[in-house]
Image 1: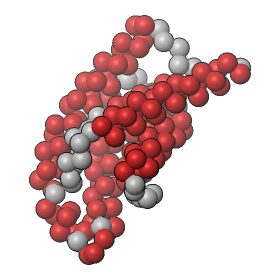
Image 2: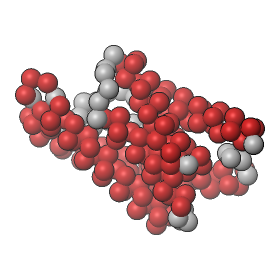
Image 3: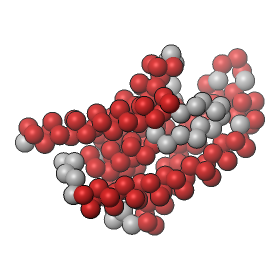
Image 4: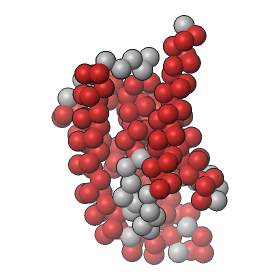
Length: 168
């Protein structure tokens, strides 16, 4: 029993560290980041459970915020939902159609939360201007990121099953 708990903590720490490093090293492109840190967060939710996935997302985003000197924000919630979506994916059979549906729904929710945060919490009253001016780039980054997320999550789930890794 104790070994399983330690194993979960270790794997959660690894997923959080990987996601943190990817997010910190991803260039900040303005209104729509083209980053792939969501993949290890989603995998943590898939293999360790949605609750642990939420915590992994919180830790990964907190490390990024500390590194950049930001305070807590609504953007953290949009990172955390990727961990929860991995847990949701685990509840269903993770075939390609289900991966597509879950990734698309999570990405739309993430984009909505981030857009809300930009529009309402940007200082100096520039939120709506920043929101509107960044819509085209956010749309382009959405189109670029989603196929990568779908392919990589599906591929990694299949590979981990073949390797018979025991995350629990």
